[in-house]
Amino acid sequence: MNLMLNIPDDLAARLIAGGANPEHLALAALNDAADQLARGAAPVRLTPAEAAARIRERRKGTTLGGVTIKELVSEGRP
Image (cartoon, rainbow, N blue to C red):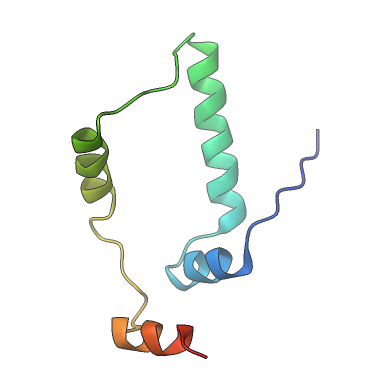
């Protein structure tokens, strides 16, 4: 099956700048979801504190690819 997934340009650009391939990430996410369904696992519901801890853990090692916050703010201004 072929699936068309529209990834917003700004999201794709951030992923690519971070050295990631948006197509591979989308496929990995779908594989993870399929594995969970195959195991009969229900979707995980996290408390806000658990979700925040998970986000903090996952962001370790993630960079802006050399772009500063100030540059990002300036880019978003008209």
